[in-house]
Image (cartoon, rainbow, N blue to C red; front, side, top):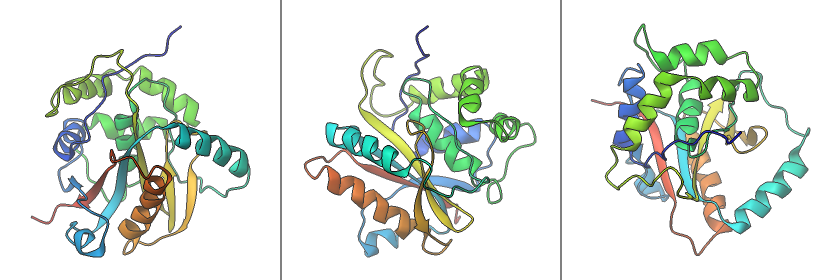
Length: 231
């Protein structure tokens, strides 16, 4: 049986904020663009930041690195049981998976409406394995429908379901003072050392720079931060 496919989400912070708001997350935290990686531009990002999303091109170099990394790290990392991690089994759903990773690992900071479909999904799946969570998402109509309408809302025309999209979203979060990279295409979370609420954005950006350095001729990188709304 073919795995299900969704339309890809655009890397547009307004679309993402609306997506999570439609699923019952209160707009006390908002997604916003990170316009550059030097300290001056990072200082413009509203703080605190509780999650960072990276959109990057999946190239041959990256795929080779991913394979090596998996073999090197298998069984070698200490991953906190508090990390919420979901595998991606739905084609083009990496934007939604990234948003779930960003929200599910920050429930202590974020606020939800009482009937929030996203909160309900996270609570129902929190004790499941990453594969079981993925299967549960395939059956979750409220998230799928919101994803589809959000995917068609972006500024650029959404690609068709069958068009091969070689851009991929991942999330970075701070769980228990450690920086985690959460990528539904990988078998497990990647630990990138220690972090703190104060240094989290800078620490996550350092890892993003490594992604960029791996493909120096590529320009298709986008970084988005989930920040507390300062208004």
